[in-house]
Length: 639
Image (tube, rainbow, N blue to C red):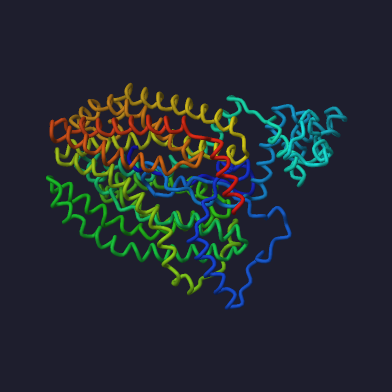
């Protein structure tokens, strides 16, 4: 329940294993939120295709089993631009698995079978080992071992007792099979049905760690684009520092792009890949149209802020920042839509690659424009604008010369039609995002009533809590993905073990954040400002904020666990109710009624987080996880 902050894209993709690929799903999808509206949109487009005589590739069914549209559930991590949402909207259909990801899934299944002594020696296939290892084994290793490694597969142990779900011919279980062979599914399902598959906390800790590390890197990279602007102008003065915080309170129209997660994924999974490009065009045109009134609003934001803020200089600078940043809106919208375009194809690593290039360039431009060229305050938003327009260009270059062009069917006038169902599909996500955004950002606006020093201090505190949140939030996404996959594989006990590991992992991360903020409460403010009054305010409130970090991290993990078992709606309602019925009333009552100012604002947030974390963990503990398995089966059966 902290302020909205940067949130990605998790990566996966075909090709070599990279930071994004480790999130790839290991089993069948647990939850596919098939949308009737999405089906309506795609059906309308396909009808137009038939009228125009267009036949999509694979429309008659692919003959390649590898291209079957196997879907997995993917929480949309970086959907909301530069600020982090309190809780994610309802998960939507994830992208299809690529061949590489399916192979990785088989390796995960193989590893579990080996851990439970249901497969032979733990020796990876020859083609999965490195060149040096294979060369050494061939010329210097034991010939029998090498020959065995080159074999077609490993035998499944015969101690699996047959059940009603087992194949009628027991030989199908004991016959040696390659993990990519079609019979491996029967072997895996037989092992699951017989109750022989178990996991350990060590395996789950390793898996969740591997899942979360690339997410943390990606989240930090994207967040650095905004945070670098705060670092740059903060040392100019406390008024500038507070103005940046006000300026970043922008309408999060990118919440509308959540509809692309469903539309593009279903279009790709259906085999009509050209419709992915059509939905991409349709949404980007719509977002650009929607930005017109937003741009007008931002151009006159100074006049509006003058009516709300006691300090006219803060309103003037915030208005200047917003006027400049409008030039980056088209590029930012294009990036958000472009991310959905590549993610629906399983190419999650593309966004990571773009950020690896763009984030360091943004930091360099912040230094050049603000300090080297002496442009001052206006240099920060100029650097952000350049970065926001550069990222979609980099994304386009990768797709054009790398991978992903298969879903681009060219520009079409049809992208200007059939907007109605798309808007209906997008509005729930936008409303939820805006509700969360408003609930927390109103605290920043409230802090401005106490003066420029308090506004600057609030900017520091918000940025610090947003930064530390980049660890527990990706961890919660990794945990939800892992648990959802285990639920989808009908491994309830393993899912519960994974949830316990995730809980203690979140606790350790939260305690680390508590220690970090409390022990460095006089040092961290120096990153933002040299104003002693602001430093004193931040240091005085930091112990309270450090305590909040404990419950912030635990609440984030609770949201992840709820998503993993398909109970995300409960988390959404719990968050919004705790915000508007508990946190905000307490914050305003203490801050203005008792004149506790910033302390009062943060006490309300902390109490709200305590309530959310407590209620959600109690709900998780009493939830029927077997029912989640049955719901997953029903959704997959109807897919």
